[in-house]
Image: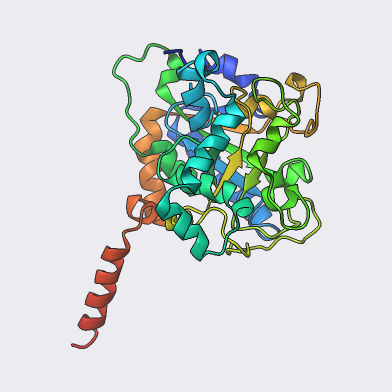
Length: 338
């Protein structure tokens, strides 16, 4: 199997992110983490009064990994470009077609009154939630949720091979910075239509890679027109789409305040897409680098407990068990009768 691309050290990684030469790029001490934590929360508050969906975040337990989707990792590690009888986009389209033929999935979308043309990206969202390889990458509007995912299950190596192995990462994008460049899928094509996955072959190369730099995000928390500036955003999060795109059969996305970024490329990482120097042709060329914060793993337990104590962000909140919640409601009601 082929090895996935990684960063050999933090100095190499600096070149791909907007804060690469700033102190916030590497956080090694509790004092530095507390300052960074406060700065992130304050910046979030400043924007959220105008647009609660402006900032999005992603947490990862390893700083060395580049931002690839699960289908990219599968495609690259298995060297599928060498033996598959379909290109990458055709592979993704075939995945969706197979899901469409599944009896349960087909029934779900029929009951939601989704036509075949409306289903492709909601199906990808469903497959993403249940662990199938997809070209979607999980992000969240809530920085504390990203901090949870960056520290959950994190394991510190006794003898790391490289210094970068001692760090985990949090990524941050200010979507307001990219109006009309980083589009919501509902603004991608007019008249409430969604792009056909196969259509990405129409402006791609022979390997199924789009020649342009086009990507978009998928969210149930935004209305049509917000990503282009045509609709005024809200200062609070609510589900706003007429037809759910991400939350069908996935209620976890509500407490996680989640959304997805769709990457149609077979090998190009998200940080490469947001680097104008690497993209000479096509559209979305104004996508410039975003932020990355690399935090020493010795601080992971402190950060995990900090978000639990201050915001009650923990495993029970991120992965709610509604059976347990119903039992608590019953017991609380019965206790109130005494």
